[in-house]
Length: 335
Image (cartoon, rainbow, N blue to C red; front, side, top):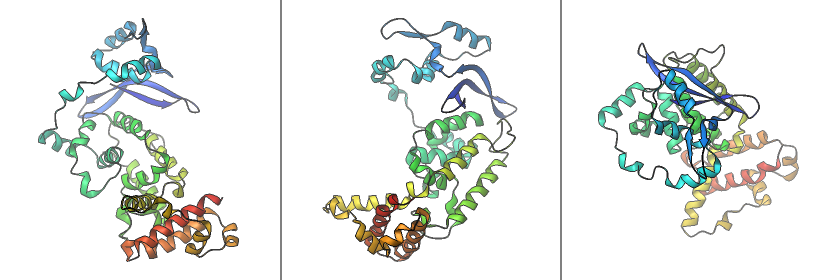
């Protein structure tokens, strides 16, 4: 069983208890209980920190042929319990869970690779490890066992829940990775600095990949047919086009990691601070020129210079870092 979150108006979500089941070799999902806006209503409180799941709720499940372990239901609904009780009990939950942990055996790992979709593996890999690459995605089969024996709807709800922890500044990098857009660009720096790639080409490839996935019958097996794009893909379109590229650049992480390495090597962080006059000089601009620009204009200038200075193109790492710092200094002042 799992909790499915559906839209219920502005910033509101409706929760439905669902379960996946196998029919004809395909995993489907069915609704069990509509829990409304507050799944926590299944709890009955009887003391300072005592509670139990409502017996009428349990009877309703049994009437539908659902015999879920009480512990499983408690774990499922615990995030929605009274905050006071949650605070008191949280330190004592799952204290001994590690004792029951067992590594996935070879047969289970092989099954996970065989029965899961590449898109799901890339998403789960990024959300767990913060990156996705051809070199590592097939070496972490144990991560994907959680996807086995689940309907497409349950998998999407699982992914959705984990995406909630993803900062908006990571959206472009996340989508670039999970849709494997790097394969369309031969440039050696495509993975390390995707925002230096041609934006129009990237947009076109992204939309094409969304359409390709929407038409993939294997991916959507058992999912309720949609009149237009399925909700998960609509979400990704919004994430992609609403996230301003300059808010989550891969080059920012590159420059910050480089600055961090120099800090740990004994260089004071203050030495990396960029003044506006220095930024103007590095980018070859004047204050008057900047005043007539928009963010996309400065980004275009940055990309041109970044292609020349990027270490993968034979450029100097230090100059590339300073170029990035200059860009970051001037960008917030533009509309």
